[in-house]
Image 1 (cartoon, rainbow, N blue to C red):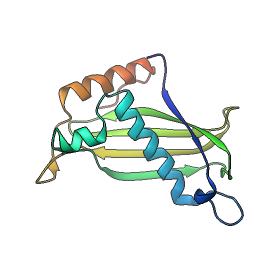
Image 2 (tube, rainbow, N blue to C red):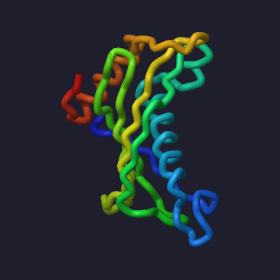
Image 3 (cartoon, helix red, strand yellow):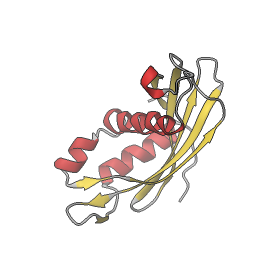
Length: 146
C-alpha cells in the first residue's frame, strides 16, 4: 500500500438539513463508515467477521470532531483514514474529510477498544490485526505513538 487509504463519499439529501447543509452528526457517520471499509480492505478484518467469527469487537469509546467547512448536498468527500496510536487493546484513528482540491471539511479522532465477547471486556488487539495496523502506519509515513 502506498500512502493513506481513503474512501469517496457523497453527501446525500438525507444527510442534510432543509438548507442542504450536512447535519453535524452525519459527519461522524461518514468517518465511521470509512473506518469500517478500512478494516475490511486494509486490515482484512471485516467488522462482521470480527464480531461473529472471532467473537470480538472494536467499538468506538471516544469520538472528537473538528468542523472546518460544512459539506452540502451532492458534495464529494474524500475520507482518509490514518492510524495515530496503537495500544494494547485500543487504537486511535484520525479521519480527515477533504474535497478534491484538498480543502478540509472535517478532522475526526476516533478511539476503538478491542473487546472479547460475550463478556465485553477489554482484549488485546489480535496479532494479525496489530501487524497490519503497524505496517499501514509505516506505509503512511506516520511515526508510531505508544
